[in-house]
Amino acid sequence: MIVLPLAALPAPYAAMVIDARDGKVLHSRNADTRLHPASLTKMMTLYVVFDAVEKGEIDLDTRVKISRKAASEPPSKLGLRAGSEVRLRHLIRAAAVKSANDAATALGEAISGSEAAFARRMNRMAKAMGMTKTTFKNAHGLTEQGHLSTARDMTTLGRHLFYDFPEYYNIFSRRSTDAGLKTVYNTNRRLLGAYRGADGIKTGYTRAAGFNLVASAERGGERVIATMFGGRSVAQRNARVAELLDMGFQRSPTRVAVIKPRRPVLGSEGPAEAIARATGLVERTPRPSARPPKAPAPEVLLAMRDGIADALAEVAVADGTVPAAAPAAVLPASLAAATIAPPPPRPIVAEGATNEDDEVEVALADTADTTATDAPSDSVVVTRMTTGGGRHWGINVGLYTTRHEAEKVLLKTALVELGTLDTALRKVERSPQGFRANFLGLTEQSAELACRRLEAQNVPCKPLSPS
Image (cartoon, rainbow, N blue to C red):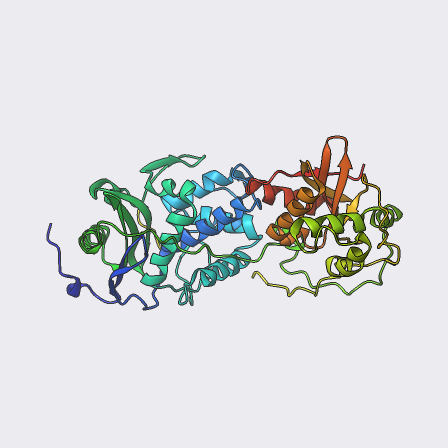
């Protein structure tokens, strides 16, 4: 095979090679030039889908209803029919392996309700990842004005896919896979079969973009990622990428400390946004006007009178906030105000014909009696409260041997799942078996959403119905 030197490639051509272990750049050319990424776009589509599955927003076995828009996307495609239902895992396989445009659009609609809303989420993720010169307009990568990226940004994305979702990364190395409707074959199978150590990642082609590829390979503990934009054919592109990978292995040291990229963090999707995604009725929900304060239920007031002072004193002593010898009477007045004061309002974060290669307000009641110090030991402890209408559900996050342990778990869990639990009532309830850590004041939907997200992070969770 005759291999032309890199200088002979027609513009626009761009390339980058990095040592995947620490992210060091080993070679670059026009790496910051904004070009059409084509189906390299699907790397971000899949990254966002993996992130949503991990957060419990959707399940791999969820049956996704195919819209007319998704079914009408041009090739490459799986051949989805409007109105049919396909499991999410099969759509993922079709998008990753066959580079199916209809599957990519269906994935975006399943996660965010519409492709436009999904593109906004893709852009937020790109920004959080440090992809400063990338703008996504769709989920599939077909040419659209303003839909641009760079070799550097796509290399960054490829590295994140490898390190952030190792449990899914293997899909990019499959030569073929079952996509539900049929078996599909990898658009990158020629390089996977010809280059030793190659295990991904994604091809892309449109007339405007040329033949693009982000490839990753591992040899002897060394891993290199190479990106190329602007190839003239599949064969030429593969030859160039093999050359780039060889260069990477030659220039990378045998031993180097692995420095994983920092995982991008997006704000949690709140219950209102989840409703919008599930129904497709709205894309944004404005903040409602504040309602007049409403007194909490009598049982909540009773719980506060009976237990908050004793619980606060116990937590403060156990954490070393005050000496164990301090009189109990001096603890509640100083600590209760800091513990149950309403938080400041939080800002709203808005979510924001070509062919592929073959390829709530917190309402506080009168707390005059909440500083009582003669609480019995079997009291219920309330550390936060909400009075939103219809919020009669709750969740349980475990049974613990001490009240202090349950309180600490409630606090840590609230910090982990701010999106659904920030305004919930945290309550420790004593039972013959121990101390139950509960969140109350949730809607049925927010309770189920919170449990899905917590269970995705291996946190035990059980919804509590009003009955």
